[in-house]
Every structure is written in C-alpha cells, then in structure tokens.
Length: 112
Ligand code: 5GP
Ligand code: ZN
Image (cartoon, rainbow, N blue to C red):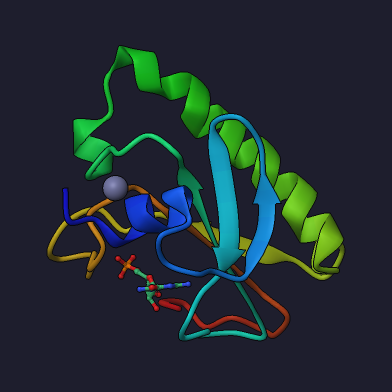
C-alpha cells in the first residue's frame, strides 16, 4: 500500500519522532503551521475518521492520551494547544491515514 504514514511507521521514510507506544506514533510535521506542530497517528492504517470501526475507538483514545503527554513534553500544555483531525476533501485532508495535528506555541487563528 502506498501510504506515506504507513512508511513512516515502518521506518521506510524518516521522521522526526516525538513519541511512540504499541499502537500510536507521533512526529513533527514536515511543514509546520505553528511553532509546535506534531502529527499523532495510529500505527494501524485507517484512511479517515469515517473508516474507523468499533475496534478502532480505543486507539483514538490512545491518541488523545499521547496528545496530553506530547503537549507537556513540548511545553504547550499550559499555554494551550489545538488537536485537529481533518476528515475528507472539504477539511483539506491530504494524507489518507488518520492523523491528529497538535498545534501550539502561538495564538492560533480560528481555522489554523
Ligand atoms: P492533512 O492536510 O492531511 O490533515 O495533513 C497532512 C499533514 O502531513 C500536512 O501538515 C503535511 O505537512 C504533513 N506531511 C505530509 N507528508 C509528510 C511527511 O512525509 N513527513 C511529515 N513529517 N509530515 C508530512
Ligand atoms: Zn497508512
């Protein structure tokens, strides 16, 4: 399967890794939209939130737990941060492997 984030999980494409556990991985976005811009993904390939099944809600929770941890690690827990999932065309999803953007380190606008 030609999925860039699956390749990052397998180590076939390098990434600037921030966090990893059994089911979740996080790394810095290659084109940061804020001083802190992490991407948090399930290791399992799930294309969009629309494709998540009953068995996937646990890893979505794990992603939120990782986000709390990463926000502390990257120093934005106190100042605040945004956790964003883009689902589908109108949201501007480009990579079709579920990912949450963790954005912070500046006063964020309404849309990004
Ligand atoms: P989307 O628009 O799908 O929600 O966001 C995809 C994000 O993935 C973008 O912010 C983009 O900069 C990031 N991205 C795309 N390819 C790579 C890559 O190979 N490595 C990393 N670290 N980020 C990537
Ligand atoms: Zn994938």
